[in-house]
Length: 295
Image (cartoon, rainbow, N blue to C red; front, side, top):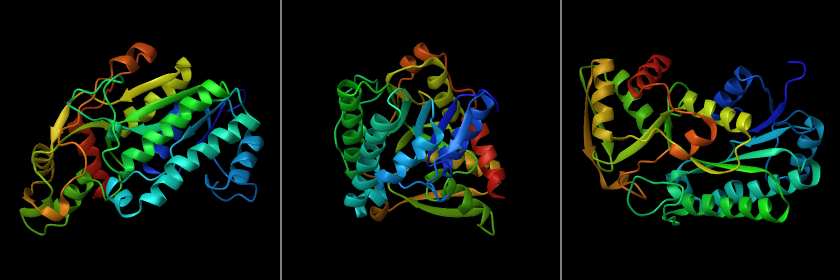
């Protein structure tokens, strides 16, 4: 794409990162997956490799979609979570300061940083409710530090739950879909922490479009990336059951107890005001496409 602004994407092969690349291209950017000099995927924990990747691309912007995204995995490996989510981001910030201080960075944080009662706005209280949230809060603090100290243009997107085609099998929606498709009958049972836990879900394609919108608008600061609607696990199971013809029975299990807040719902007004973005794909359409991608 001659003349297109280059956007270097870390984590380009992941669920969100792969869609970010597609939507950046659709928006007229040239999305470049981060690679080291020998062609391997650039490792954020190796600052020399990160510097090489940035120097070779000379990007107008960088998106960091790499890192650990599972709170359950983070609870088992808090040190590993901190390494990739926090130290990896610090390495990227330092590499940008050295190699491309004018390139805008989009850092992906999480709704897990919030505490208190929804709806969550960017000004809502935050807290390290678990190891994953702590890693993301620390990452945000370093982004703020580099924005003030080094003058780096940084946008932080607090991502709420994402769903849609390509979703990892470890996420609840995919777990429900896989249970239904593999039921071998008209009923399937899935263990969950609490069927009434509710999450704010956005289609991954809409979320990726939001990343492109932030870059197009040059919007700095911190923004919620969310739908503004919370949906319980029980309702998700009902919708997926209707799409697959299999009744999903959710059974509460102590071993599946969720960490963090019972209900998460965000307010995306600030992102809309800065970029004009709003989610366009309905939850039912997201789940329909997820089911079809798993058949």
